[in-house]
Image (cartoon, rainbow, N blue to C red):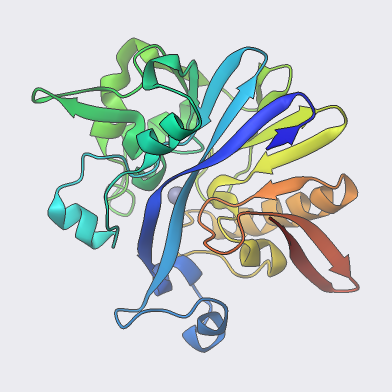
Length: 276
Ligand SMILES: [Zn+2]
């Protein structure tokens, strides 16, 4: 797809299955199962979308999915069949790992940064050997010093081996003239979304502040994974008003039927209109 002078591709690390209770938090199943029918283990389909951006001569990858370091049991826990697809999808877009200049992690949960690193001869190395990895400093701190509730998703193997390739950033940060990281607090304290701006048009890769369209349509629908749910609520309130006011193309990371769309509103009803 093109947005002004920027070329971007939604690339997937595969399709997984997430526990419906984790995904929909306080929302009763009788409500969410109408939106996303679960399987017999109460799991809902969850895509692992990442975003490849070509801007100002730079090749930028936003998030890296689950990656390929999981063992068979780990893959089964995520309900992913067929393993990691990210590198194949990048190849299809004409990009080799050594060509990626910048990796941006929206946050360091394992389904967003698992592909940051890979195993090579028994050690863990950066998957993208030339890339700088742009990660919020506060997110890095939360990941490096997790608590009992967060440690299951903050796996050091996904970020600690980056060494000098990690570039810690503080708050909203410009990446190129056309790409910016914006703090969208709530899912984690320093969660960031990525905005593309070119030729008067804008697109926003939301990350986990709203991994599915329904999370923007219904503000109270917030995953149980969010560490600051009331911050998520207020961040989403601002985001959806901004998205309407400026007609921003929204890109959803975990959505399986609706990857991109525009926010629409009629009175108190809000919805995302799908873009093919
Ligand atoms: Zn997350």
